[in-house]
Length: 433
Image (cartoon, rainbow, N blue to C red; front, side, top):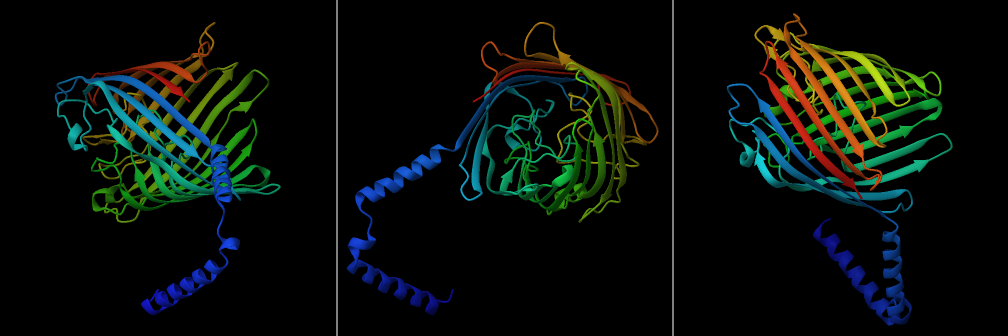
């Protein structure tokens, strides 16, 4: 707006103000009217939803390798608190802060966080501090067979199982994105999601040199669901990082995924997953990348128990030409040794074969277990990397509250040609308000 225009507008408002003053009795609200307006606003906001959670965790990580002369230990508390307004004409807003605080031992390393870079200690990616985890404005509309949700702001986003885009719920500091996110529920079981990603806030935190990279990225997901039979997803993840230090992480991933469970009767279900994706270099990535991803799982579920076997294949031909997933939480074992697709000598990529079982434990209401055994090889020449066993238990303490949870994890890795013998474990308790 130019200065003459601004002056004219100012004069106009001043004139209107003088005229309004002559009719003060008609235009100035009374004290009672003002109190009524404030009361209505407070009543409206009281209809909103408060949310809060707390999680304490003690984690230990030991790697028998020359680079790691100490055992890492982290005793941390995650606190999160948020508020969502009630809906007004389809609009609502939400804000959530999270903080991670040390309670005792903090002998661990995050190499990209200066204050937590401790050579000789294995990495536990739980940075200390507080930040805005989510903050968005949302518009919703629903018709007979269509529902639209448009969200603008900072949002937790997860695609399918999180292989290529995740929130990383296990880590104390969650991952979120600055985004414009559109979700459509369509007739006949179809759905569509599009998201523009401007910045990602990774689990390493805002003080990390790689914690908040800017992007010009896009997410596409077309879904179809037939209840109790199949869920199909055709997706694209186009990561275009804008800072030179992240150029090699810029990739275009296109894939399709189908998964169950296929419910056979009231007790039995067929558990299955089949997925394929191809990844190419994208944006300013100087490297040539042409890597495939395959996933296959098959098993059965019976009254809450499930047993399945699977194989995940992450292609790799060289140190630079291999599958990457910089916005995902670690897969292929809870030691998190394979958070990055490995390379050793002329062996690249990862083939992870596994069997797993999970389900409720005996007469203890709310107690469940998971057990998974992995066998790891390189993808290009099947050199044996090692094996891993993961055991976990979770107890929802229903006699006290269904919102109270206690759990533990234990993982052991036996090395062959990659890494060293590794132990990792954690005990935790959480409560959601």
